[in-house]
Image 1 (cartoon, one colour):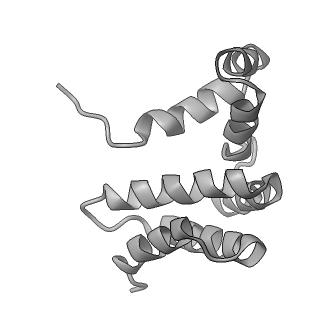
Image 2 (cartoon, one colour; image 1 turned 180 degrees about the vertical axis):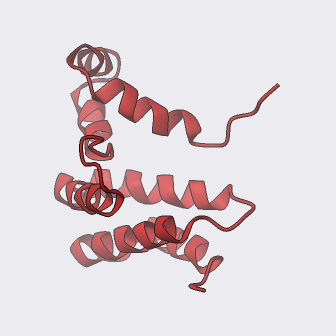
Image 3 (cartoon, helix red, strand yellow; image 1 turned 90 degrees about the horizontal axis):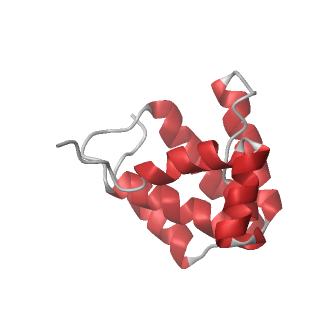
Amino acid sequence: MMRSRPGSWWRGSCTTFWRTPARRRELETRFGGDVARLVGAVTQDPSIRKYRERKAALRRQIVDAGADAAAVSLADKAAKLGSLESRPAKRKLHHYRETLRGIEQRYGPSRLSAMLRDELDRWPDA
């Protein structure tokens, strides 16, 4: 039996639910408009082909969507890093650090940003 990693359902759900009008309506019906907007805010745009551009757009989108979207992003990233047993890819760590920087720059430090910083500190730059 294959176990999914914590948070793995979320990553798939965001892209699956949000990228079609029917799924977006289903998400809004089941969970309400606020949740649907949060899911949209933390979902990357798969039409942006280059990784760096896609992640930079996602970071801007999260910060511009408000403090709730920022909190969801921080919690998600802290949980993902906390579940890892081996070093994540360098570009993922860079994306997480830039996400943290952008959120703290806009909204200031928080308990969630401290949690993500602690997880990032487990994986210092090589």
